[in-house]
Length: 205
Ligand code: DAO
Ligand code: DAO
Ligand code: DAO
Image (cartoon, rainbow, N blue to C red; front, side):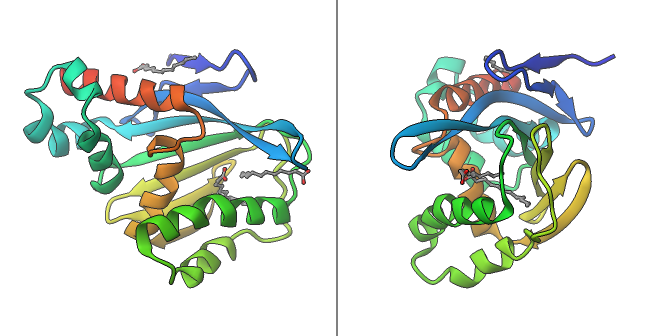
């Protein structure tokens, strides 16, 4: 039997471990302001990272620092974005009326701004490659589970309710997507802090 963590605001439940070795490091909420007036809760998310990859790829550099030193260390969250560590962000849809076209435009806004931040302006094609995966016939009702996984070799793999919808190899896209959750201006600041703290304690296990 395996444990899980339940988000008290939305009731979304996240298993503590995914795919045997990816550990839950933090959970949070993606909200969006619509029509300039109200915020809607769009999805709850859980951030996972591969236990073995973390030890293998980060312990040499950071293993000697204490948990509190790590928390204050910004280079270390940058390394999490950049290094080829297996990670998954699991989204659980909360908003009941999501259309594929609104997903596409939200994505172009959020991920698009990060692609420009990290990669300059010439990324329209990459963005199109990714959003062309979002076929109009997909349905993502409340309760749908979307996994965005960074696999070895900087491959971003997307599944909806366990069904693969596409894979794209791009270090820039992986970094831009993860930046939404653990970068400088994350969707949910508390989730990012939890990730840093839990990661630091994993390094010390
Ligand atoms: O390793 O089994 C584990 C559990 C790690 C759980 C970390 C989750 C942190 C979630 C914070 C929730 C705050 C509402
Ligand atoms: O048009 O009713 C509306 C508001 C929809 C807001 C959609 C936000 C989409 C956020 C991205 C979801 C990714 C799964
Ligand atoms: O919240 O702005 C955001 C970014 C969310 C990334 C969503 C990716 C959704 C991919 C699957 C959609 C399939 C219709």
